[in-house]
Image (cartoon, rainbow, N blue to C red; front, side, top):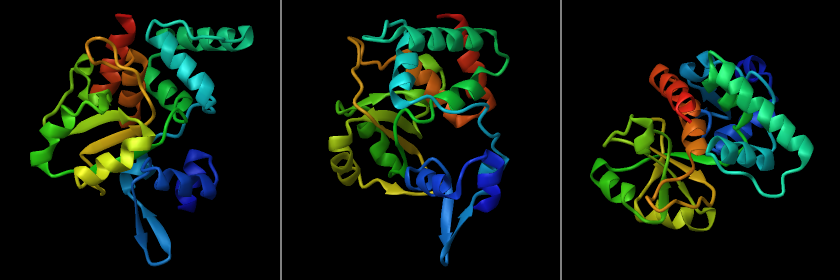
Length: 211
């Protein structure tokens, strides 16, 4: 755990928090936590994260929506970040750094036979790899946003359990879907960035260029 904290330039307490939120793949071994080798290979953040409020304002801008009641200084900052994304060769790393405080996420496992029902459940808003704009949708995985007040109810109904081999990622935040049932494009970009794979990174570049 100390090695991971040092590589990511964060405190051990922050690592504990990330494990609780399901953002770091770890296993309890005796009184200590063992962190998966894939996590140790993950690149550290390029910069400090935005505050939750500024994170959601940036998500709105990336979705083509003007945030409400945004101060001039924050607008200037976020416009600069949008410009940096457009110019960057690695926008996924920037997004993952800036937006990692937007919402807690639960990495869970569901019975394969239940994934179809979960995907079509009206209480969730599909995002990330499960959003059709990502072009990466898989029948074997579900990524979505759910109101924190009903998240546990959903977890209980579908018998979702925390597991290293996660096939369900539930982000805990209220998200308003559009008329087509889609969440904001900015969330899709942020979620894809968290997966940190080459396919996801390439799709982020394509989506940003088509905004």
